[in-house]
Each structure stands twice: as C-alpha cells, then as structure tokens.
Image 1 (cartoon, rainbow, N blue to C red):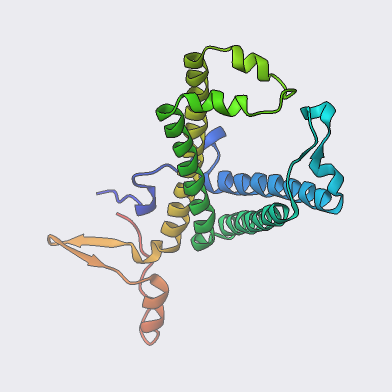
Image 2 (tube, helix red, strand yellow; image 1 turned 30 degrees about the horizontal axis):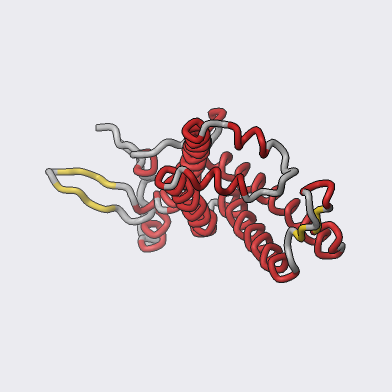
Length: 226
C-alpha cells in the first residue's frame, strides 16, 4: 500500500502562476511590506510638512484638513505594525517557521471580515452609497457622474466590486493557510510515519531519536514508505 505524506492531504501546495505556496507567501509578504513602507514614507513626509495634509479650495472646493496630528501618529503606528507583521510572515515562510506566519494570517482574516461587513452594509442599506457620495466635496472627481447613476445599478456595481475583492482576498488567505499547513507538516513529518502490521498501527519515533537511543547497537535502517 502506498503511503501519502500527511501534509499533502486536503490542501494544495501550489498557488497562482503555478508556484509553490511557500514562494507565493514570500512574494505576498514582500509586496505588502513594500506597500506599507511606501505608505509610511508618505505619512512621515506629511507629518514633517503639515501643508501636505490640507487640500486647497481649487482641489476640493474648500480648505479641508485631511488628517490631524493625532490621527497621523495612529496611522504611522499602524504602518509600523503592518511592516513588522509582513516581515515576520516573509521570514517565517523563508525559514520554514510556521508560527511566524500566524500574525499575518490573522490580519488577513480581520481584513476579510471588514470587507464582508462593508458588503453586508451596502446590501442592507443600499441608500448609504448615495449618502456617502453626496457628502463628498463639490469638486470631487466624478461625483456628478456617480450621482447621476441609477441607485440600483450603483449598488450592483459596488457589490460586484466588493465580491471580486472578497474572492481575491479569500484566495490569498488560502495561499497563506496552505503555506502554514505545509511548513507545519514538514516540520512534524518525522513523527508522522506509521507502519501497519497484523491489523495494528504503530507510531514510529523520529529516526534521529531512534539512532541516539540505540547507540550501543546497530542503527536502525532508514525509514522507507511502503
């Protein structure tokens, strides 16, 4: 009977572009890391120059402050935290340390839940979209075009966009989860070897432990899957 490695069951080891889930997780972590680093640089530049945080009347029809100092500091702290989480995920996938991927996976679940709540809000309160558009400044780009669209069509377009976004985020979550399962299974593969004999299943110890405990005797032969 041919034995199948436990970490190959119930999930896939490949992701988009036919690359391995470990490679995909590394690329995903690096991309998130770069994006958050760029956002952090923009925030630090805005904090150093308060004039960048204000939109002139020619841009938005009024002198409007985009973000005050307190919110700017909170945004910088969030960006630093995201950089740390993305760096941990990249390092964990590269060094095959599954525990380092967990914070990034939790962030993905939280982000997916927020997007799902937005979709539910749009579905339950369809008029909230037009109310939000109506509160935008008069010279906001494409505001009049959005207001002229039928409310039902506008809701369908927003729901379609959110659905595609949720599907993409769900796919990325599955990629990171499969990477976690793969690394965790690889690290525990030494103790997940079974031998079936006389209708009984025996759990074999790791090969290194068996070699150490039987140092005075001849080392056991290498484990070979039947």
